[in-house]
Image 1: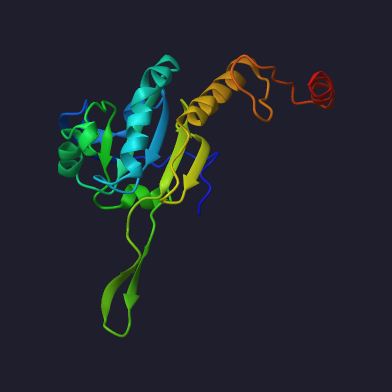
Image 2: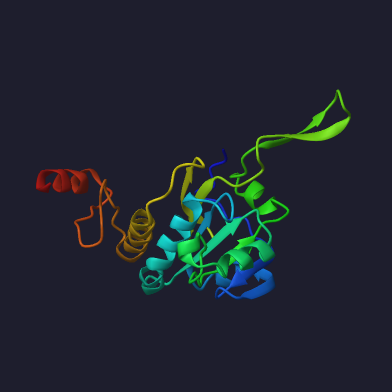
Length: 211
C-alpha cells in the first residue's frame, strides 16, 4: 500500500454525479486546489450495505465540512449511471437519496489504482494465455485529506467490512487547520478547543506537565 502523505494528490478528470442529480462528464479534482481542502473518500460498491451508511453519514456532517472550507468527494468504481440510480433511491430502500456532494465514477479503476486503494489484482494467466483477476476489482475504504496546495496530509484505508468514523475525518481537518494557523502541533486525542503544544523539548515538557 503506497503512502501518499506528503505527496501531491493524484489528479483526475472523470464522470461524476453532482447535487444528487446532475451527471458531469469532466469532473476534476483540480477545480478545488488552492480554494478548498478536500476529503476524498473511496467506497467499494453502489447498492450495498455498509456503503450507504457512510455516504449518509458524510452528508449528515456536510455542513461541518463546509464550515471548514472543505469539499467532500466520494469515489467508487461504479459507473455514473449506477451512481445516479442509487442517488434516486430512498434511504429506506437502501439508497442514498439526499446526498449532494459529488460522487465520482472510477469506471476505468485508474483513480483507485493511483491512490493505491484498489482491491484485487489483475494478472496474465500463462496457462490460458488470457488476462485474469484475483478478487473483486473494487476500492477499499480509503480516505485522503488534501490541503490547499494539493498535498495529501492524512490518509486512512479500511478493509471492505469496516466503516469509517466521520467525526475523526472532521477532527483531522481541524488539526491540519490549527497547525497551519498557529504553528503548534496537535498531540494524541487532540480536538478543537484543547491545548496543543510547541514542537520543542520545552513545549513537550510543558504540555505533559499540564496534562
